[in-house]
Length: 440
Image (cartoon, rainbow, N blue to C red):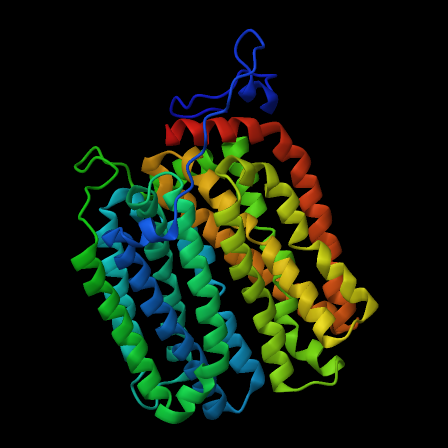
């Protein structure tokens, strides 16, 4: 259903109609403009948003390792250590639906800065000596919880900072640096924590939130609230209900959200990297290589997809790329060697670049005033899909070999993506028209 007066093609029209005049005469389709990385990096506000995210990434990598070490050293329990880590998946399920609406009620820069300062204080409390495990778990939960309004506000303001195809290029830059930052975190986080200690690592994490807040205050413009302020302004609960109805009531947005949630299938190999490495006869280095494979593929795919493919062609390729994010994993059923496995996982990671197109299309279909909550709902579901996928994969690995579980995940992901592709074909034309209207 078209929303907010977007121009869409009449029912029954096809993509071929774009290349013909009203009387069937062919004319040249106007060239689509693709934004370059250099012009995106020239936008000062984007540099501030990007820098703030990178600061948080560095701090969170250190904090994640530090908390795991802290819990294991104090309890000696792998179960409690894993439980504390699992707390990072639960808060977005609550914060996404309930707190992301703040990004549509309040000025979005204020939401980001306040969230950063609250998280700095919470992480700072983790440095206190002899902190009970329940208190540490509660602080971890609250810290991740306040990431939901921050992420929703950041996602909502990005299209205003980077209009049109600049948004895709900016998303690609963010995704690439995030993937490589995660790989670096896997490789050096433990060594840094071992060198400086858990308390110092947590203190650095708290400081990164403070620096992020200062960077946002200095580099991002203060914009008014997207909702009218005053007594007539809707409640947070009202915004949440309206946002959920908008997202899941529109078939275009619903399809795009479901495509995003396919990550629950192709994230399973990363969750099984340790037992998979053991089945290959490898150790810690093999685990690191396997865990790095899909992020590297995702980064390469983001570069190629954003630089070599036209904006509307990305939407035409979206369903095929989504299937590619799972299909190579089926090859693991043959129990290939390490480097064949790595190659399969890298190719699957490249397929996951379809998320760039889905994200950009979601931006042009969701109303600007509901953008914060819409992104919050999508992101909370994405977190849930990842957590559920890892848990199901881990449970299945108790019964089957890791290679078989990864292959089954690939098969299930391929089947789900193929089913979505059928429905996507029905709404893709409308989404392409909405994207062109937004860029005109």
